[in-house]
Length: 195
Image 1 (cartoon, helix red, strand yellow):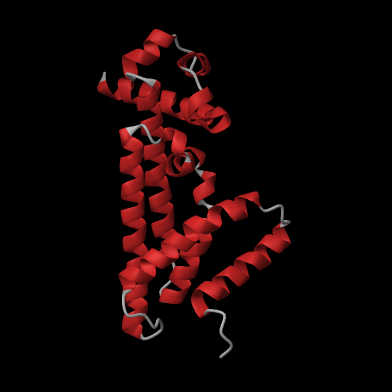
Image 2 (cartoon, one colour):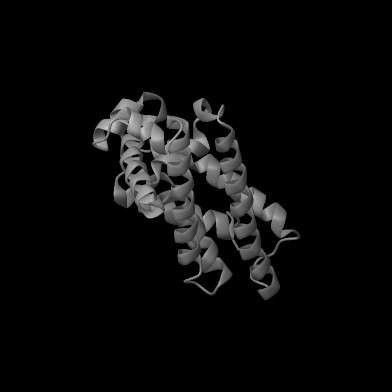
């Protein structure tokens, strides 16, 4: 019976994820989730207390997926500069592909939910630790010139957050965007001073 209940919950979460992605949290209703799941609304409430609980499960699932993908991509490279480059590219491209998680990180209208604040805090801690570790490894190998990997990680994390909106709003074609990314990585890794 427990297995069946988990299968039904997984089905509901998958359906809800697509609806939240399409309409956003606020515009999605339990009726829509029930209808798309081919269930009655009361049946949905048997598995989940509220729309917020469903959204929480969706966002937590996307957060785990993102973390697993990011770790896989970063661990493909041995050199700290290549790992940092992989992180930057991943952060700018893939975080937006998980739209519900991205909304949880960025939409102030969702801040009233306690779990959103927790997810944001955990994501920030994980990301800062990941970047700090890459920088630390690079400092040990003598390829990064920093006095503190933690301060460097905060600077890079802050830059990444600041770049999300301009890149989202950019009307650039794919080729222009690729050039933009290459320039961005050059600036982040090597600075702008001529050597």
